[in-house]
Amino acid sequence: MRQYPLEGVRTYELNILPDERGFFAEALRQDWKEFIDEWITQVNLSYSYPDMVRAWHKHLRGQVDYFLVLKGAMKICGYDEETKRLAEVIASGEKLALVRIPGHYLHGTKTISSEPSLTVYFVNRLYDYKNPDEERRPWNDPDIIPSEINGNKSDPRVNRPWDWFYPPHK
Image 1 (cartoon, rainbow, N blue to C red):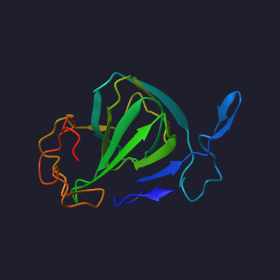
Image 2 (image 1 turned 60 degrees about the vertical axis):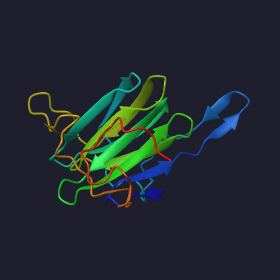
Image 3 (image 1 turned 90 degrees about the vertical axis):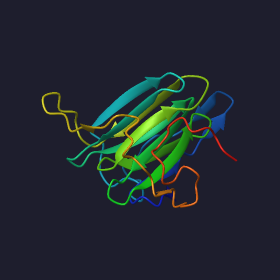
Image 4 (image 1 turned 180 degrees about the vertical axis):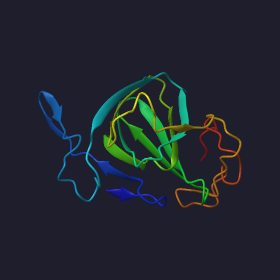
């Protein structure tokens, strides 16, 4: 398990059991107490084309999202409006990991692979069609200005409006 400087954001690398048929992996277990603080009530599937951004939104009634990228690669971000800290996780179907994002953070995703991404995500609250628990902001909101990214205050993207399309840097 890897913890991120934004409290509650963490990843859990899945144990892949390969054999001559392919592989088997447990995607989520109730007894992973060190990783899962709440139980799942709904499972969703998301398919996104390359360079597609799905951001920003947050949940105010305690929802937590667990993302599992099955195909392609995705950047998953959580942003704390109070501290202006941002957690950035790169997840892919090549190295399966469960990504936990507490819903009280603004969060979003971008497909960063040249192929579409396929993501299953688990949530601990049922979606309420009549009264959705979503507060939305534009994907390119100029007020989202991280003061640090994954604990790094010298990242060149710090203290600038968040740019999902900032080119990869070395």
